[in-house]
Length: 277
Ligand code: HPA
Image (cartoon, rainbow, N blue to C red):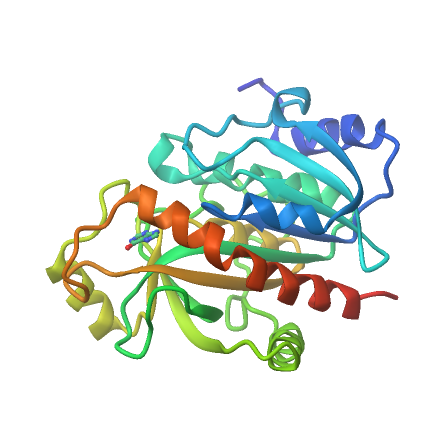
């Protein structure tokens, strides 16, 4: 970390990204575990490895590449992030969500988040796609902790509607048009990296969680801090601990991500196409 504040760091990163010959993105998509293939939807892709972007952290997790891909989807200029940063890797939440700061400085107005999750609600099964309607931040930390930079947003940002109602309606329409089911649900973020115990999953169910994961929420909070519109999809890669009978493995999570990626990719492509100005 340098002595620079995050605003200047985000500006520096955005300035380097702009030196590449690609349109400034208005929509960005963060690809979760096993979902890196969704970037195949990007036409005329320009790939920028994270190590070429100043102040970007490095992903340390299998299944998470480290590239920003600029280009277009359905004519809309986009940035797809292959690989994200998690609290469990040792990053602060502020660092984990730094790429979202950079995307906003690049002009992104809509952020689409995707994540692999464990299914808690009894009606969810592996392979299901969940449209996130709200979240529980159980990470034990908040990415906005510390001095607030008013250039990013207010000290106490409202979180009463994190996941944009209009974007959710578009996602539901497009999923239905493709014949895919999209189930609404609440995402609980826990720090990991150990998966939950059955007792923890029972607790989460009582608290109103439908799916559980280790990402998404810091990015959504930071995006809302800056006034971005947020849409989030959770892919159920496994039954949460105690809901299913088998132990949970990261390999299974990646495999399910790859299987369902095509379905989710087509929905996201259609949603982005609807955002053309
Ligand atoms: N728990 C937490 N995170 C996850 C899971 C899970 O069961 N599956 C995929 N990501």
